[in-house]
Length: 119
Ligand SMILES: [Cu+2]
Image (cartoon, rainbow, N blue to C red):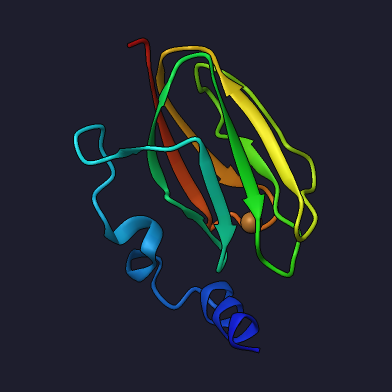
């Protein structure tokens, strides 16, 4: 029930700048390494992360609704998870260096950036 209330608040657009996705700094200097990203509370957790190129990242849906991880237009690589059901996972190997912006195709308020680098 709490999650449903949160979703209603977010979908009502009560200030996108106050959501976790955009209120925190998102840059290479502050991002942490991640090989697993949670899709939870209608957010990517973490929403900014570093990936060594060639590394597989698992997006794990812990919400009670489907999510769809999709690269933004014009990124160095393109991917689309299709619908990831609750409890399901999507794996993507980031293979091209660059800053890769992505979003959820079902709930576009969900945004994330992967900083992909060769070690
Ligand atoms: Cu989503």
